[in-house]
Amino acid sequence: MISCEEFFKILNEHNLTFFTGIPDSTFKDLMKFLTDNHSENLENIIACNECEAIAIASGYHLATNKIGVVYMQNSGFGKTVNPLTSLCDPEVYSIPILLMVGWRGEPDKMDAPQHKKMGKIMLPLMETLQIPYAVLEPKGQEIEKALNKALKYFTKKKGPYIFIFRRNFFQEYEMKYVLSNKYNLTTKEVIQIILDSLSNNDIVVSTTGYISRIVFEYRESNKKDHYKSFYNIGSMGCASSIGLSIALQKPKNRIIVFDGDGAAIMQMGAFSTIGKYSPSNFVHIIIDNEAHESTGGQPTNSTSIKFIDIARASNYKWSAKVQTKEELIESLDHMKNRNGPILILIKTKLHSESYLKRPNKLPKEYKEEFMNYLLDLC
Ligand SMILES: Cc1ncc(C[n+]2csc(CCOP(=O)(O)OP(=O)(O)O)c2C)c(N)n1
Image (cartoon, rainbow, N blue to C red):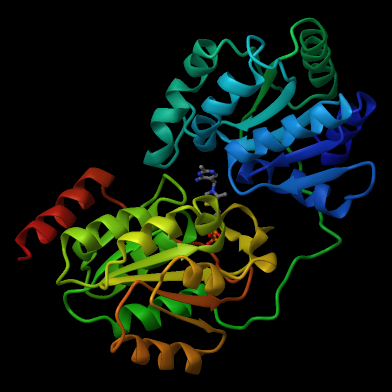
């Protein structure tokens, strides 16, 4: 392992001081370091999705002639194929960018099922994209060597270059500035209250990370009625669109989507499709802890946007913002007499989750039970 300080020192010596991206747990400690040390000489913009991060680093290069560093989990690498091939590629605008990609689902290593395919095809995909890469070793000299190679490439070819990071690359970094918010509700409490309030034929779609794991745990410890849930364990940001489409096909059932603020922001365009097609049986619940809690609690842009106004302006029919248990129970009650699309924005505490179980069957098995349930509904 290498300390975040030493790693940054190496990059800094080569003028690589502008960072942007979407968090991955591989970079949890590095991100704490970047937050603590944010200054005129170290900028870090947490983007809304990986595609945007490439665009931000490109704008930085256009304005400064310097090279931006973009960090991401390999699950988000696929999103960058478009700007990498049509914006940064040496045959288009030729924009040098140093990508830092966290390798989830590395072959022969234990990982969750949603990471397996990308873990396996990541290197061939980089080769197909004709982007040079190096799997980094957490040693100063090795990083120096790899970086010198990348810098030579930037001078000669002016295109993207990728550094790949395995887990446990960075040593733990003790953060001085601890992120927090002023809310008291926990995600677990919120999910339990809502699941307990649902009627028998309500269907749930839940987002990537802790939220799906909490829904899973609660269902597992109660009625084991997983067949009423679709756990969207991968494809971050897609839960609301999956829910929208089910709502349109099953108009007699209410569809409850549990979203995170990071995930909702990642695919914010979905608000417009939900508003346009406007299913009255669609309920969008955003559990907003103002952070990507599942990858270590890095801030999202949620503090500077108003989800309620966005929903209203996108043609949602009713919305409520809640901060307490009483407000939550009251809005769940009001919601029963309202037509959707509905948004309930629930402000929750950060750093409230401890160890959470993961679904123990294959995703396909849960899908089949879920589909059988949906197909039996009239
Ligand atoms: C495309 C993509 N990028 C990044 C990730 C890594 N990731 C998994 S969960 C998560 C955070 C989700 O944040 P939010 O939706 O706010 O939910 P919270 O973790 O706070 O419950 C991230 C960044 C991913 N799974 N997919």
